Amino acid sequence: MTASASRPLNIVLERLRAAGLRPTRQRLALARLLFQGQDRHVSAEQLHGEALAGNARVSLATVYNTLHQFVDAGLLREIAVDGGRSYFDTNTSEHHHFFFEDTGRLEDIPGHLVAVARVPDPPEGTSVRRIDVIVRVGE
Amino acid sequence: MTASASRPLNIVLERLRAAGLRPTRQRLALARLLFQGQDRHVSAEQLHGEALAGNARVSLATVYNTLHQFVDAGLLREIAVDGGRSYFDTNTSEHHHFFFEDTGRLEDIPGHLVAVARVPDPPEGTSVRRIDVIVRVGE
DNA sequence: GTGATTGCAAATCTTTTGCACTAAA
DNA sequence: TTTAGTGCAAAAGATTTGCAATCAC
Image (cartoon, rainbow over all chains, first blue to last red; front, side, top):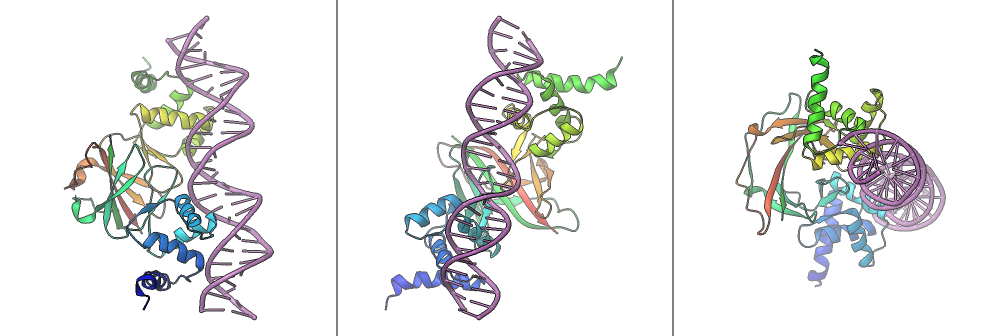
């Protein structure tokens, strides 16, 4: 059997189906870049470049649309630390970030390594969706 | 004496001088809007609108430049929660934020009401500049 | 087939920049 | 004066949108 080559693709494909997204050629290519391998933080522009470099024809507009669909489907998390661009994080589990002010790079901090204590109750009628901790570091 | 009318302006003026910024007509007008009264979170566009509404002629470019000068001078803090625009926070003391996902509004959480425990050491060669905690809430 | 998806180009939005003009010290 | 600051219009990014063509089911 061709497991080592085909299984990873099928997993990605199933993941799209499970999210209710048709596994089109473009979505598969992007999902493969995003979800095969390590957790990562990418910008739309960056992912677009990788897709082209990997011979997958995708337009930048589709990259943007796809990234947002993935976010809506819970496959990705969007992060904004500096104005300008958005980054998309393939790690959707509870975790936080180091932000390197000099380079603009993000690095995950596993959720269990940070404890946020004593957060005040949210205004009534609202509930806490998520708590983001960004540790800004510099040289 | 005309203290009740002139003192607040002088305080703002002194604050600009202390920061090494010439108290020009535009900077004074913006500083008055920002620092007279409650702490606030404003976008450049918003502040520009207020300035015009208050009969202070300022160009949007100058509003951007001025906001960044104020940030560099430590008079303001820049915040990016959602991609797109930046917000500027007149509260420069240690504190955190509620972010209302539905409306995009920010609300301060006094620093002493949040405790972040057990943050891992930053990678060597770097030091922690600041820790931002954003409590995202929704309806 | 039929509705979802894509590509492209144009539009939009936020922010920055170059440069001649104006104002503060 | 002299140098910093301003306005304007144009440029630069990042992201979104409209619509005809294409693809998955």
